[in-house]
Structure formats: C-alpha cells, structure tokens
Image (cartoon, rainbow, N blue to C red):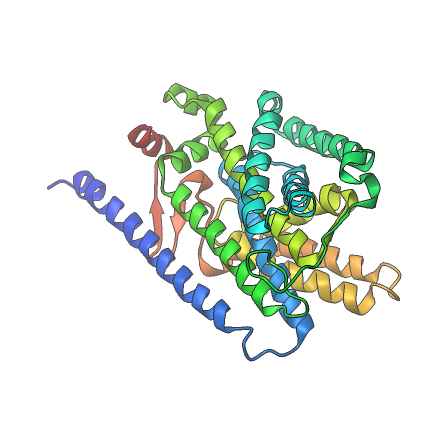
Length: 356
C-alpha cells in the first residue's frame, strides 16, 4: 500500500482518538469541578467559581461564532440581555419558572441573532464587528427607555421559596455552582459536537477563505446564520441563569459594551477557535478581574483596571495563540490540530469537500 493511501487511512483514526481523548478529559474535569467546592466554606470563593463557570459557558457560545466561524461580534450582550429579560419577565409577570423561562430566553436570543445576522452578515471583517456594536448600543438605548420592561429601573426577582424549579436559594451558593457547571458543560459539549460535525468543517472553511469555500459549494450565508443562532441561544440561556443568580437585571448590566467584551475575552485570551480556550481564559481572567475589583476597586483609583488590562496585554504578547498553546493545542480554524501525539495536518479544502 502506498504512503498516501496509508495516510488517508490513518488520519481519521488520529482525529477520532483525539476527540475521544477530549471527551475523556472533559468528563474528568467535570467530576473534579463538581467536587472542588465541597471542602471550600468561603462563600466569596464559591461565588467566584460560579462566575467563572458562567463566563466559560458564555465565552464558549461566543467562540462558536467568533472563533470557529470567524465573525467577530461586539454585541453578544444583546443576546445575554434578551435571555435575561425574557426569563425575568416570564417569572415576575406570569409565574413561569426560570427552568422553563431560560429556554424561552435562549430561543428568543437565537431568533434575535438571526435577525441581527440577516443584514450584518452582508458585511465582513471590522465592518461586521462595528455593525454588531451599533446594534448593541441601539438595543441598550431602547431598553433604557422602554416602560414595559421597567426602563432604566430594571427588574428585581422576588424571592418566593427555596426551589430548584425556580432556581432560588436564600443564602446557599453551592446549588448555583452545579447549575452553572451544568451550563458550562453543555456549552462545551455543544462545541465538541459542532467541532467534529459538517458545520464545523464548513465554518472553518468560511473563516479561512470565503471565496474558496464558495468554490466548494459551501453555502456561506446559511452557515453563518446557523453559527449565529447557536451562539445567541447559548448566550441567552446564560443571561437567564445570571439573572436568577444575582436576583436583579437592568439595561446597563445586561446590554452594556463592557459585558460584550467580557464575554469575548476568555475565548480570545484562552485561544480563539479552540475547544478549551474559553474555559482556560475564564479560569484566569474572571478570578483576576473579581479579585482586583474586590481588593482595589473602592480605593485603588483605577489600579484594578490597570492590573487587569496589563495582564491581558502580557498574555496577548506572550501567547498570541492563546493559553491553550501552553498545552500544545492550536486553533482548528485553519485545520491544524496538535494534541498530545503531535500534529495532524489537514488540508481544509479536502476536509470541506468530504463533509459538505
């Protein structure tokens, strides 16, 4: 058997082994994170882990659109806020529990992502990023002046009783740890499934070269719309869970530009277009952000922001490929994967042609 034929036979086996290994590592990490808060009695540290898991899930959702598909969005706070407000309104006005309301919020956020994508995906590069930013600012202005959703006053979630169905716990933080852990794990699993699916290959091709993707009969616009819907839905569910966790939501906290940036940063720092990048980025950035605010926010005259910004700059300069490069993992957006056994070099055009 010739060497090229042998390579064709062996390559899928290497990819399958890599994906199985990722799944096993994910299962081990899930168990470790489930056990981690048990010996920790400090409520603040438990709350820190809750936020880390939340932003790991949110950033995983952003990474599907911004990392795999290459559509850099600065407006994901729109989907977060729509999910948050939908769940809060259904709960406060109609008594629908958040365990159902979060799916309604995620669905409406996915629909909104499609509506935003319909005109904006006609643009590319920085024009698309600016368009999403403008949409985010418009929605923020609308929600700030819309009396139906209490305008700038926001919505306070009333406490009824300790309940898993209503996701209400008077003082306990541990239940929310497992809620956010489930959210982050499901977001990771969706990304894992997508990464090895037909859509995953299509999105990588679109990100690499739109013209080449079209020449391989890839339907570019529908593929971007699918990525936007999945990304928006995941983000909307996260917004609904966050609202139940803090018990309050208002336009500034749900639709502001800083939130859009904070959703994207873990994926960018951890490794854009990688499976583990959002989690690693959240594990580093969220504790640093929260701790610097807690220690210096009230008396540091902006020193907390300087430390946080300096850390991001150092990480970006030292590891432009993201924190995942420390473990030999590279973005699959270009079709190259290096995990454990070394690199599996893929021809992206061949991959797409085989999977479209």
